[in-house]
Image: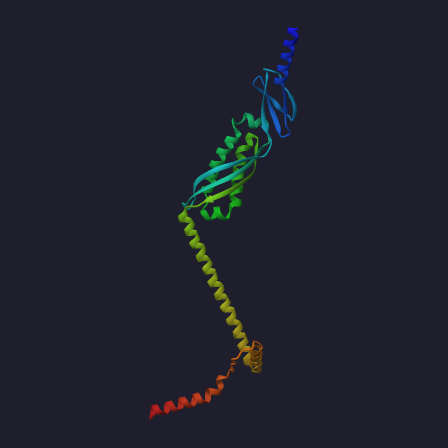
Length: 256
């Protein structure tokens, strides 16, 4: 009786140590007496007790939030940059035997790569060409992690923190740029208005009746608004004889 109970206990112990269940997103790298056999899963995995050892590896997408890195750009501006790295394991055996801790290794590699790539560009490039920098960092990381069996899918720069002095300088620059554009737009509007007035004057000079029609149209607009004040424009040519007479009398007095 005791022998039977002992056999049952031993059997349960062997079953509990030899049977593993892996989820759909997991794979198990099997080591037999210290040597890699292959990766198995998902489902039920049977191991030889005291002989086989299994290391689980997740195939799901892994996200790493890289801590803010102090970067000095090519134009000697100190900024803090942090990023997000998305990667997944594509070769479970390499991810286990080629690197001790692939997540930690990926974090350290990402930090040094961000400092290196961002330090080669100027501040304006960092702010305006984020997609280009993201692609450069992704290419470098992917090239270095390929021997580890890891595929880098996306790299995104999250924040670029500028010093307060630089923020104020950039705000002044943006304000000056907006004022410059406003002055240019205003000058272009004045130029276009002057051109249109010159064209209108040329047309009126060729067709004098157009001035009379414009006068009547203005009177109609003023009457429709129920104004109590009416302005009658008088041509300056009507006063020309009087101005000439006054000029002649003034000249005569001087000669006398």
